Image (cartoon, rainbow, N blue to C red; front, side, top):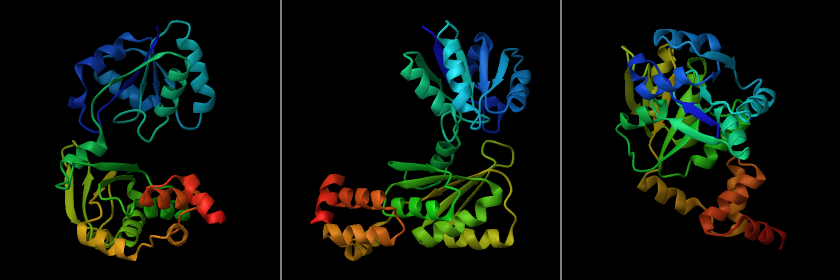
Length: 277
């Protein structure tokens, strides 16, 4: 049976490429890559001459089925992102879904990952965490996402590009509270790797004076005990009132029902029926 290999690639330091990844990328007939020019540089460094094909967010709906059909003829395929694990904030996840639906074997070649690398160096709680990734592009959708994760007690992990960092830090401070501790990681695994471990308010102030450079991982502590107690005191316990409360935070109707149901230990259908009464 054909196999789809989801292959991790270095997030900055080429020495993080695994022996297994080098071997498999050299053995498969084809590699699906987000940016073939970028991946060609990686392959050249390791003297790998496997054929590349472009597979990215803008062609995944047409190219994905073509790749699956090709695999069904008996070929193995490797999928790589520009950096890190494919399937995390990139179209590799879509290809994996198609392969599984087609009954093909899907396996990972583990390796570098920016989110986990930043988390373990953050100094924040690593027992439980929520990966949020990039916030939605529109302000309304971003506000809805932050309203949804605001009450979580687990550590939060975000990705951000330099040209959006200031806006995102300001949104985090506004939605989660400026006093929350955070760790900002940039240039991870590279020569000039840097971590800033401050409050969100302090990070906002710093980047008002300094130009963001490089790709960032933002790790933010979860809701603390005192904050949780204060929010619990403010949060209504009546289903209808709780639903209205979540609507006021910016959540859409379905998300507000889901959040209220979770808080009260009910199903979303229970909340819906109560709203009809």
